Length: 254
Image 1 (spheres, helix red, strand yellow):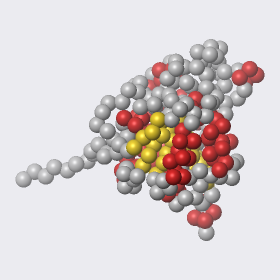
Image 2 (cartoon, rainbow, N blue to C red):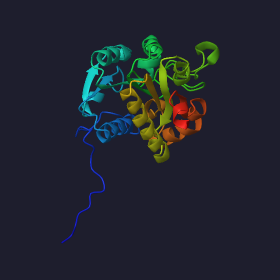
Image 3 (cartoon, one colour):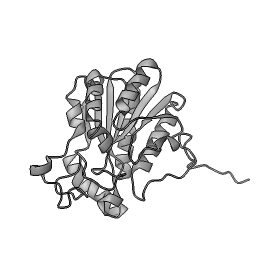
Image 4 (spheres, rainbow, N blue to C red):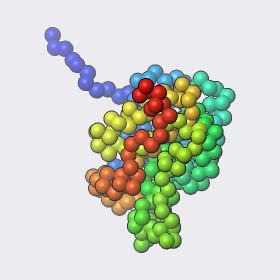
């Protein structure tokens, strides 16, 4: 009798549907990572995600847990209300650079300052994806956009915001790390970071924040392969990967 060995199966954390994302976009990979992590940690039944306004506005159609749609940039306020009234839940926001670093900048700063006990998943693709490729607060110097056709000029537009570094200065921030999913080693690091962020949230330590560097081949005008290479060769030089703040590190080293 021939025995069949299952080497891979779809995570219970994923809905059995196709996503609407462009080829080469990392949203789908990050969704899969979140879904698998929630499933592996047995958190699907108590998890609540907050969708942004942006390319990931339909994230709730793909990840198999409860979701709430927030007004543009207001996901941290919605997450705060849910987590404070239902502290037993695992609450996370999923936000792009327009939603979080632009219109929602004030919301995320004050949520982090207060140490709100939810997890922020911040997708930084250095462009406004849904609305057609306008310059974002995270657009790289020299990077072209529909609203900066000669490239971002720091004399006119300022320099890109490093959100993770900025938020890490706030007292309520417990854990802050920047990751990417551009290759398998980095994907595995991102998986570990996501598990740690969720674990610390459940321990009630403070605000946890993960910044994912992500590609946008459509609005970058690149192939998916070239976009992945550019992320690692250019974006990751300015937005350096790694742990930026971890208040538990000293305790773990004792």
